[in-house]
Image (cartoon, rainbow, N blue to C red; front, side):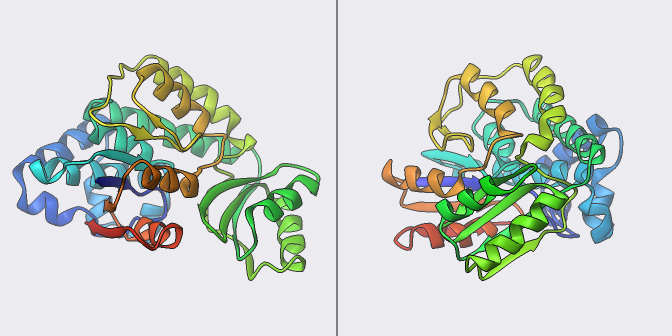
Length: 292
């Protein structure tokens, strides 16, 4: 059984999606539609912009979403999942690819999410840090002992967690995590503390946009980040998407549950190969591949 998975922020690169635009009329039409909806030519930034351009949250998120979703569309019958999932932002790509959300609504929601997150990041100094080679429970315990906001944000694979929160709390946590034996505990170059209570203002804003958007029953189950479980009920999907902004991404658990439910092959659609690497670390028995 095939699981198709969709990457999140951080996988972007200059030139992403250009081959699709140049060589596929359907892809070109979808990219142009997105330019129209967004009100600026995101394709110019994707194909010929700078790394700095692509690092802006308001550009990064729609860019990765477009690359992933348009790729799925152009695969035609080759896109034959038994289940789908996406990492953080990638969950929106998965929902559009599985028919739970129209392409146009997906573009609008991803743009609204990116802008809301950007605004939340500007309210207070916050950041994220990668923690390597400590058990999940130990990282959770240390985060809980630090004054201020610092939480586990991404359970990426065994031995790799990303923590998120206020800058001072993150720095204090990193010191303690190194003392506890972490191979690495270092800040990431991100706009702010995603998947933490610091995103509460963005959550409220996104909830409003999601509430006004029509969702459908997806063609296959979507394993959502918040609880790592398969969902097909539109109301549940909407609630989980809103909760995702301030809750951790349970990627390790999602992949484990997909394998338990019969997934034998994981296909990553979109820029980079991050998810293929994580899936292989979570379960060495399954096959991984990707399309860019």
